[in-house]
Image (cartoon, rainbow, N blue to C red; front, side):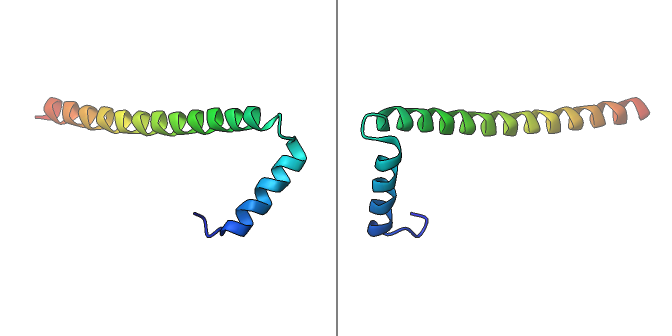
Length: 69
């Protein structure tokens, strides 16, 4: 996992607990999860928009070829 070992992950966890406190960890985790979910949704939607744009370009090219023929 990103080249991090057990010791590094424990150090990061301890630092997060010191900074945010044990009571805030569920809120921080929830906000992080929502952020990642929204990011993935945005990336997927952007990919779909790009694919739709390519399909529209191909259909426009076909229509122009049919008019020329």
